[in-house]
Length: 441
Image 1 (tube, one colour):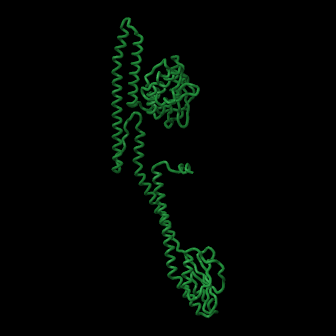
Image 2: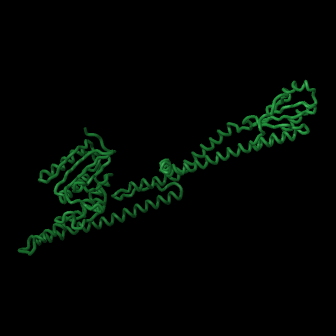
């Protein structure tokens, strides 16, 4: 039952608050309607207790003074909607038990004195009682008395419903006014992508909303400025390091019979690779200036695999997407290149597969390497993170290849995920949305 109620509970703040306000107002309207009906009932009782019993008593007194053979002729003249008379009948039902009807019968019986009331019985389930009384000449007279309802007019019900509708619309409009700025802030936060370019929010509206928007915009600018400054420092350091590394490489090459020259060259090459990767990562975080273009994904994958095959690298392609992507070709090619290089470096071969899945295109690059511990699958997507001893102890790495691919995937609106294959090896899955794609078949 609780799970069922949770499914019925709205998901958005606007719907939740509006529902609570409308339910509260509906309950208040129902209480108002019940109060009106109760007041009508009390008013009716007061009117009946203050007038109808005297009318019945006056009519009985008149009938008592008439000759017995003329009484029946006067019944139609004396009858009213809430009481009538008869000379014959019987009271064979119990007296009323409802408090209001019992009080009504008691008041009428008291008003009929000095004519003795011999019996009082309720007629079925209605608000009517039958009374048997004896006239002064000893004849019996039966009185049928009814409690007349005083219903609430139809226009009152419609008015209350109209009020509820107006209040519900006002509540929705008020909550919309409150939640719309929250939605704008959430949208601006979603637009703050991996390039950290600020997406300003309109600073209008009520004072509290404008203040929150100004604070959010200032926060975006501070974050973007801080990250930009750090990336510029990283890029500058990485760029400046290339010159001394190049000089050291030349000196090693020119030196005659330098001990361990090969080791020096290997270390310098590793430093050069690290510097180049650092520059590339800094440029990636500083933003992607490449414009969007439409390309055939299958053609891109075939071209990439053929380039590796021409150099004798074990890279294969399976599957077909059959769609054109509106994307940044160079960024997408760099993602795929990093994934394939990573697979070849640590897993001996790369198996590229592509398929359409759940409204997205998925490109998987699988290898036959040792894989990655489950608790470190997410960590290796962070910059400069390296597994202890690397995935293959005979190879190294800068720890930036997967980080760059991850950042570029986010900038394209996609996602990069890693998982270990059941049969061994690692699978790197790039998922890109197909909302901006069209079929090429």
